[in-house]
Image 1 (cartoon, rainbow, N blue to C red):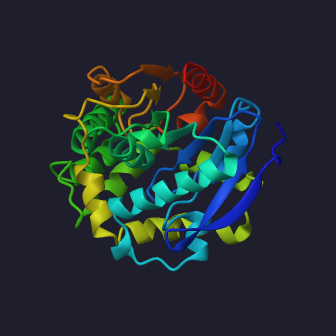
Image 2 (cartoon, rainbow, N blue to C red; image 1 turned 90 degrees about the horizontal axis):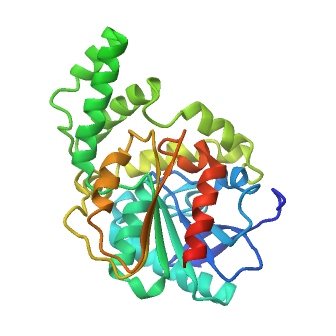
Length: 313
């Protein structure tokens, strides 16, 4: 499929003009991508999947406060909360069903998108035929502690004394709250990234700049969206205290596609949680040579796993 075999549009959803990127196909299934962040559009990554994705329709949308949707609308950070995101997604699914004339909707969440997607399928299981999680969040504080221990071991093993001091200066991590989120999590993730344990920002930026839907005016949308989220207390509280560890019963098929090297949201904990899940169907896929942005790190194997999921559904 051509990199330019797509359409873009703005549709009014729940009182805002929401940006959509469509890659259509002849199949009835529609995969709706739920991006991470919150505030980090993945529409700019769509092009790298195209050589491998020919098995379903796929729709990217920029959530409220993100990307090209943020560009089109004024957004008050105090209006950002899970209930609003769920309401937006419900209307989005309704629109996609009508547009594609199908009920065969699959949610694919990444990072923050796994929180949104998991919450959605627990609340509205009849709206979709399946859920896929990558960079799956299951217990934010446990994940922070696992990530901290891994980073500490890595720094000690490398003899990186200056960076180890920076880590120690963060105190008893994860002593994280909505009030200190920016000053705790951001420096921690920068250290992770520097030592290959989190998203490679340079790689993501290069991928973004090559996107056929990228415009120069989009360059500052990511920091603008990030700043907005850091002013949204309801979202920050979710990011530090989110957990589904004790929720194990799902009414829809559940699939995880996990990067073997994901230590930003440690995939080892998601795999442990997955063993407890009760669902009509379930399967876990490990993607080698891939971290938190599993689709960007290894698009071929990622798409192969998604294709297998759709064949099962």
